[in-house]
Image 1: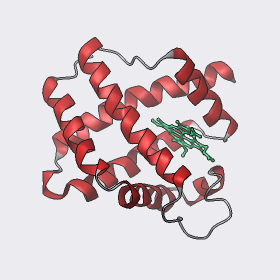
Image 2: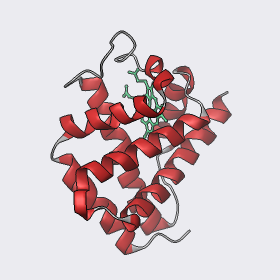
Image 3: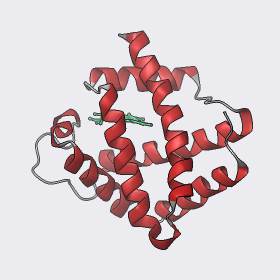
Length: 154
Ligand code: HEM
């Protein structure tokens, strides 16, 4: 796999921008997830009993940050090593958490679309297809690793 320095830089730069307003972008991210797949709501402990996406919920923010941050870290690994290098214990944890929560393969596409839409929202005119491509590529590799782990634990 070829992940270029340019792609790595694009991912890092855009994460730096989104990081500056976590409450806003994590809310946007989850609103998009629920818009694309309303039924996904019940999988998340912090959404199950509410009608609206809660503002300033620590668990909601944590999940949004994890998805963005780990995708960013994956981009760095792809460029440096040409592969995903999440520590085994982390991957096992991710596999079991998602398996237990009832997450299925197609949900990863939903989250990817929500991530792309959130990037668009946050970057404004700095958003372009190259940015989207770099994030998508890194995300796909990370998602594949998590899905593989989920199948092993199943
Ligand atoms: C929990 C990361 C994709 C649904 C978690 C946790 C992490 C994480 C680190 C544990 C949070 C904690 O420490 O408690 C990621 C990453 C993803 C990803 C890096 C993709 C690259 C997804 C997808 C779904 C999902 C596609 C389903 C739409 C959940 C749920 C939980 C969870 C339901 C349990 C949260 C709760 O109810 O409190 N995820 N996740 N995740 N994730 Fe993901």
